[in-house]
Length: 177
Image 1 (cartoon, rainbow, N blue to C red):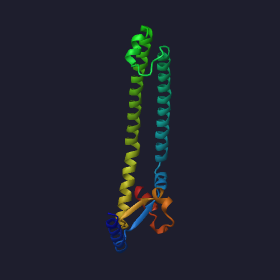
Image 2: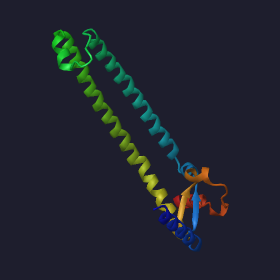
Image 3: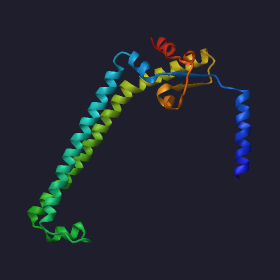
Image 4: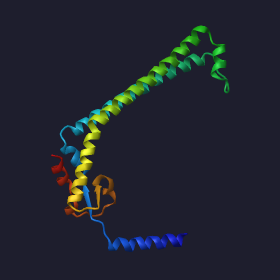
């Protein structure tokens, strides 16, 4: 098995030397910064997501604290089910626990609403721009007869050297205007 792998690897290396791909690079960050308002849209969506996540976390923790405090008064045993604990609870505590569970369902629905709002913003503000960037990169790659185009940000840690003639960022920016 290892021998077969070695043969395949050597064959592919030899093939690679005879048919080298034309490679280009672009900077995602520079391209995004050249698009008016796009970075602000990304930041706005990110901050909105962070605010929603924080709100959901805080409210979730508050509900957990309420549920724990209600249950603690009844000293639940290790393997005792929720139904068994409820049977020992006063009617007022049972109703209070039901309200906590109902509030949790409301919170989950609120979270789904937030997710839908973020997804809508992504679809309206981000996805169309990314589609245009992808189309511009493809158009530039075809025009420059490139087989592969990499984002600097994705490969820069493994590059020891790059010929600046292979940087096609400005061409992509021009196509986006």
